[in-house]
Length: 240
Image (tube, rainbow, N blue to C red; front, side, top):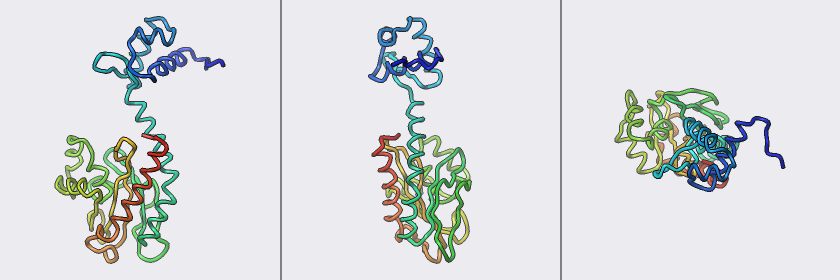
């Protein structure tokens, strides 16, 4: 079968990436595996390294780069999003409160899926809503497992502390009471990729009158179970 796309440089780059699929490879190994001229193989590998599609191990051999994992993660999160609706609807029905899923984008968190309580007083967060990372249980989840330097930057001006995030990591869920909005409480838990990275937060939110000032006691188990079901989707599909 002809594997040519008609774009020569792209076809050659694909050859290089394919040769690295089996593991670390020297330049001589790339030449042998791809049939490319040595200068061409080197030029393409270095160019792909610039874009983080190729990297090098401690011995200087070429390996697949971290950007490929990031792209796979984005694809996996799309599958996660497609699965979130039924899981959030069940969480809403179990708790009687509105349920949401958030992802982080820079200094904000975005509501990417929701299942609203059908009637009565509720906390409405429409899909696409952009909220600050400085308050709320979902923000705590999305920051709690970050690298230390990024966590410290995120804590500047926040309404929660490093001590609070340590407690979140220890128990595996977060709650807030009047932190994001007066009169509103919430509980959140992390959704993880197969590698363990936190990629989203599942939440329930509603009035303090129903959730109380200790909302985690009421709803943490259900929220954790929903987040784990979504994490399992990624594990089954092998999506990072």
